[in-house]
Image (cartoon, rainbow, N blue to C red; front, side, top):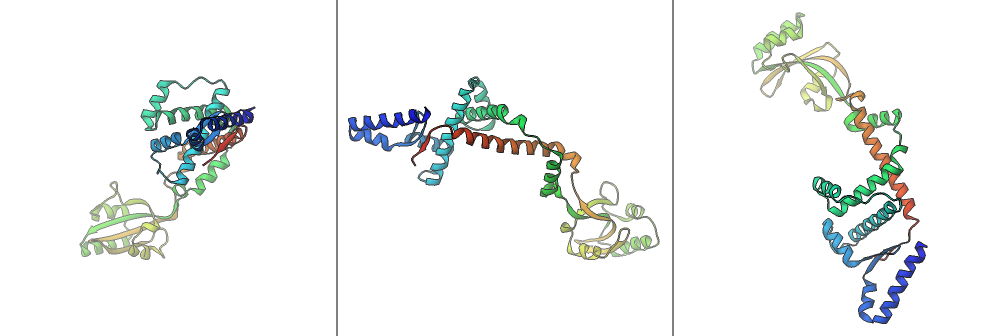
Amino acid sequence: MRFQSAVSVLFCLVLVAIAGGRVRAEMIDGIVAVVDDTIIMVSDLQERMEELGAPMNDKNAERQVLELMVEDIVVKKIYDSFGLPPVGGDEAEDLAEKSGMSRRDAESYIRKAALMDLMVRSRVVVTENMIRNHYEGQEQYRGKESVHLNQILIRGDEAKAARARAELNAGRPFAEVAKQYSDILSSGGADIGWVAVADLSEEVLHALSAAKPGDIVGPLAMNGYQALYQLLERGVYREKPLSEVREEITETLQKKYQLEAFNHWLKKMMSEYFIGIYL
């Protein structure tokens, strides 16, 4: 029926064009797409491109915008066929204002969200393995090769740095020496936490290359300071443990797979409509 309806529309337009002469024929030339009984004209496409800020006279942009228009038409037809309530004007206006999108785009977004809720949201399940694999595979969670360090920074006084090193060699705890000698203390103590190996200066990296946990290196001349370091640990340091980002990852994966499932479902639904694109 839908195919016949679309063919009927085009057939009637052809008859009108034949009867009406050249002016009507130019109207036929202006048709860029048909979705069942809905026609998209060149003027409709140009208006939509201007609204989206798409480059004019760009065939790829024209095609992409036209496909978006076709999708919006199909979404509305599916939405209406399900008997869902019309999109409220206040709801669309509020979304448009908050997001910066147009009223038309806001209405389409609301329809798609409703269809997603109805058709796919409850069917997407994010498993523990999916969460862990995402955590392990993403750069922001993966972690970096790092060193955990104690630090003493002495402003340009080599003799003072030598005295500090002598006390460390004598077995005095690094934290005590830092409180007495260091001109800069991180959070009031010697422990500066984990530092990515890639972020270390060449001097520090070279000095620590053969160090083992507990070893002390320095003094090293660095930007006007004499620096001493104690290596506490080596390892891969993650700024955020899985327990801290589990909810964030779960939400990200849910959105990703829900959208994939929805797009697959929508593509299948669109195949039930007559869609002709003549661009």
